[in-house]
Length: 151
Image 1 (tube, rainbow, N blue to C red):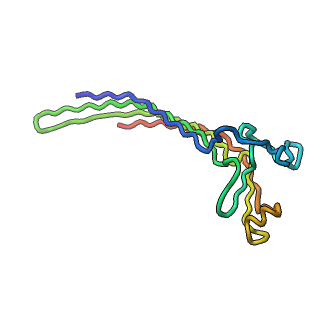
Image 2 (spheres, rainbow, N blue to C red):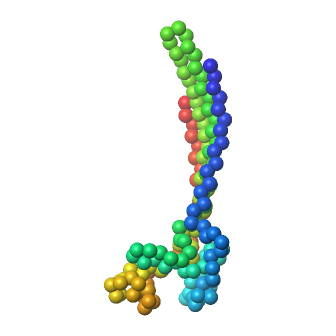
Image 3 (cartoon, one colour):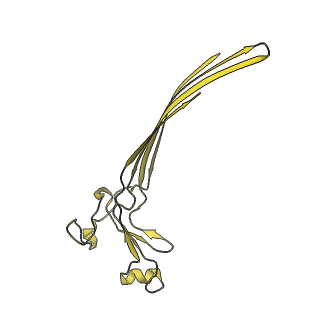
């Protein structure tokens, strides 16, 4: 008996993407914008909105954990089996090619953290405008490729 399989699987994950718009620009909220300024540079204008603000127990503003990831798996396998009397013989092989396409936008437009490092109360630090930190990062897309051969 011979079994031959050809398969394809696609898995798409889209998480943390704003739905229905993201709201006002950083400039309209009073932030200085632009690469030649000491202000914030919105790295992904498409998700620019209410600045992300993190406290000890909750977070508000535009999500900073956005991710678009698409995985494609192509597979071919062939298995052969034979029964001869009280004996059985089996041989098989499989080949697959995996693609992982990841496009994150985590921290692209920045996040303020208020931890209570000045007053001892996170919300009091927020009202005084004293963040513990500001984090902004440019998340580059990456594309992993793997080949598998088994016998």
